[in-house]
Image (tube, rainbow, N blue to C red):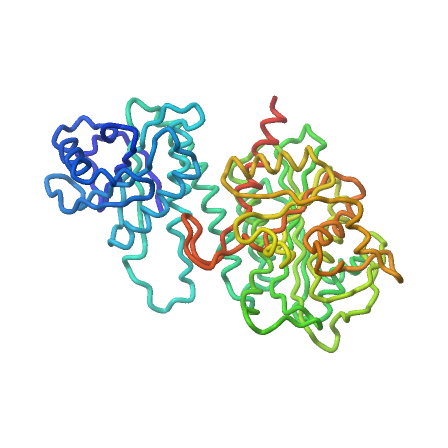
Length: 501
């Protein structure tokens, strides 16, 4: 979808649907210079005052005197209560509604705001994100695609004497971010027969070839054996698909020695291994590489946004399958770090990948680490599908991630990391075991990974409950959500701003 910013009078805009925002605490909408248009909208509001309520949508059809077929009135509630998240959500719903009405070209008048935190740049970015995220569709495997399901252009018309250059830049940045989220959604929504470790490596190669600021290396099975990556190799041994370790490096600040590692779990299908999962809903386990998808999509965005920061992405990829060669409960394996691990369940495999990935990140010079994984069902029990769970060994680093998440509307909640929880992952015959049981399962899984950080500032983000949604919810469309791509991008941008100060 093309996003355009133009300052033409609304009477000169040619589109299928024109979106007008209404707010409760105004006598009317933000009036335009066209008196006939103003009268039309004012009279509609007078006869239907509920049209200004948040998420209320109404159509005025066939105003044939102008260049658009219909006007969509979008209620935003109290203007003083508006937030970025509310604007994103409202526009996502409005865009889907306009699409269902057959719109190909949509225009939107940028609502004015008196808030210092909700500037014209913020609003246009929120509209762009809400539009692109809310209109996302995954149609790759549909043999019959309805023509009406594609929106071609969004034209945003600023109010007042806005600086078009600044607004265009804000819209372009938001488009890069939203497109990257949708790229992550695509990766997760593809079936596991297509999205293998080798295919993920191909996507990484394609991205690196397009962007000169990205360096890519892909570790093969033999190279991982040479590096003694016993944990990831133990998981991979049950599958006929060869494992891959993707390493993408973005260097935006050559004067800094700081290197932030983004690590994404890449289990392209998780059967549970010998500890086989129930068949009910096992098809959803194609999404167990959502952490990998989010990291790869983030690197794609950073290569275009070019913040002054250094990021290295580590993406360990494999399937977790049962076979005569598969890892077994009761086995003891040795990680790259040298720690021995007793296998309690082969369905606690993600933390094994992350253990070697964290060790490798440190070997490559990472000074801070954040890992992202659909790690535990326990996180879904604890936080549902609303918030991702966080575990950390470094509170200031965790606060920076929480701040980045809050600013872009991705909900996260920090869980405790008390020393007592570590008792649950102590093994009688090895250095530690890969499962501490059902109680505090998200916490003990995170603390297992923490063992390999050796006090390097680290945050673990469990997205098991937030990586997909079972129904359309505001700008989250049924299927993969692309969480937490926006947080990771914002974190890099925030770090770049700190570096520039």
